[in-house]
Amino acid sequence: MKVLVTGAGGFIGTVLLQLLQQAGQVGSQPITALAALDRQLPPLPGTVERIEGELQDAQVQARIASFAADVCFHLAALPGGAAEADPALSRRVNLDATLDLFASLVAERAASARPPVVVYASTIAVYGTPLSDPVTPVTPTRPALIYGAHKRACEILLADATRRGQLDGRSLRLPGIVARPRVASGLVSAFMSELMHALAAGEAVTLPVGPQATAWWMSAQRCAENLLHAATMDPALDTDGHSERTWAMPVLRLSMLQMVETLSALYGVDGRTLVRYARQEQVEAVFGRYPVLDDAIARRLGLRDDGSAEELVRRALFPFSCASRTSSFVA
Image (cartoon, rainbow, N blue to C red):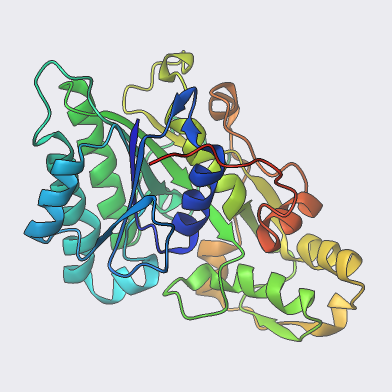
């Protein structure tokens, strides 16, 4: 099986690439070739094919077509805040380049070949704000940001390509993924990761939301595991008949205060002293009022959350710390 990861140099892509190398297979199928695509890539094992450049570049598209992936994990994107600041760039990266990728994946495949599986990293931003309570599989999508609008458009077009037998699409709507590195990311929700890093280091931190602000949380490790599982899960288990093949991943719904208390207990710090709340209504309205999520169908498909706040922190700050598997990946 040949596997391609776009956005492989990013936060989630790096973790997914590591997971693929550790597992050495997708489902029961051994990985025979693994390719990583991004504008810039860190040093990678020689068994991983590097594809550096813009996704919309003709040379990159040609390499994607010639690689002929059986499974593609599409994570490359311009994040929310940066997309909102530059709508034209968001269109080029989040919409046009994604459609170019879909075309490249089918460009050189025989008509009789099995369509490539595409696991698309979408976003809960497709729901817009305010969110209905609860959010269910039939909750209308009303994106409030261009990032969510472009992601929603790609969900629809991937579902259409699946209907026509060109691709085998599975779109997962990602929640807040933590703990992102302490560098500028263009994400307004980065304060969720900063809270973890700061209290783990015993440092003070200021949050733009109040202590009761509630969010949906997931570690990058669990996110990567869900993406990998999505490549082989059986969409037919969605017996409610959601033909678009879009699923919000199961989440932990936790308040800032719950996270502060969990981190304080784990790291022996006084979070109530270290954490300052400078509530910004616009930020809290988007990132601090998440309702209950009806994720029963996603769980039926085998997707999971992190289990507990303590496990979320462990997986977020020390991914794969307990992993003991040896990679069976061969070139």
